[in-house]
Length: 401
Image (cartoon, rainbow, N blue to C red; front, side):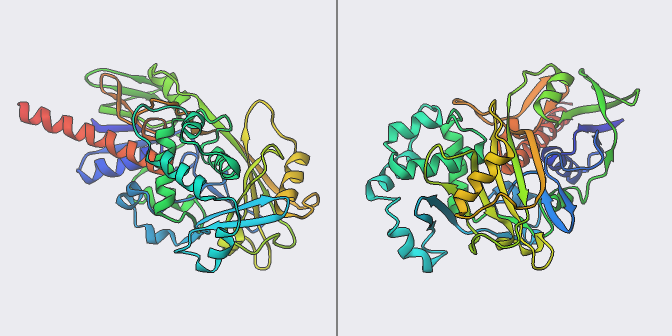
């Protein structure tokens, strides 16, 4: 009998499998789709490398460094800061230690006043009872144009334009941004999944239709019943709920538009956010090839623009108009390579949310970013913690005998 059956070969499932295999357990990973990686994937489209939605790897993630050789990703890093678009054009707010040539531009922007800086530091240092992100920023006194920039940036990171996400979780993510400079792997985000799956045998095209709890749990796949000592369901929350009866955590959606303009609209590698509220639907955009030139054929350019997927889906014309405003150009005729609509991009983590492991029924555990946190770090942490919980339980049983 297999020691552990893992349902789903996303980041959490792959990390759990790696930890368990390192402890010499027999592990089988069953993936219903045609590939490993879950929501992380990269496709080649007309010579361009397009990730499934705009995603970045932050080398400051501790779980990432314990899971893989980060240097093997050959990260192509973006600027450490953001470019803010206003009616006067773009102003870059950059880390002065990383981008010394932009110190004057940052200090002279007028976007970050001493009062704003103090208020933001107060928010970041806040502790105590968790509350929603918007309320926590209000309470800390974060206002003005800096607030507009922060709201826009975090709405893209969290897929949340209403500011209802847990403020404690948002501060955790901001802390990672302060400690590390995100980037994309030279071969695309899919390379991250490939590295995690290197020592894991994934059985693709094996869709699990039922999970049976108990002292000897089992799963049903292709009409076959497979038993194990334990089962980890490392799928999206909806599938996990269907298989286990666990409460389903809502998910938030994003749409990413991939354009291939003839010329790059800017020459910097910073992510662009709007410094003016209400101008359009785009929460962030960037010229991918300014940071990762290999994501396009030689002499070509790749621009991403992301919008939050909510009840009022923007039209392509709305997105093009807003992108044009952000870059101070006409984006109406930019070739569109692809539009990625991701309704389940990130879990909805409200105030009071806490990471953890979850044994939902005897012998059946959950793993995923809805358990560990809405990030690559959270997904990997969840997989590791769930695997370690199983290992501790096995050690306890041995000791008890």
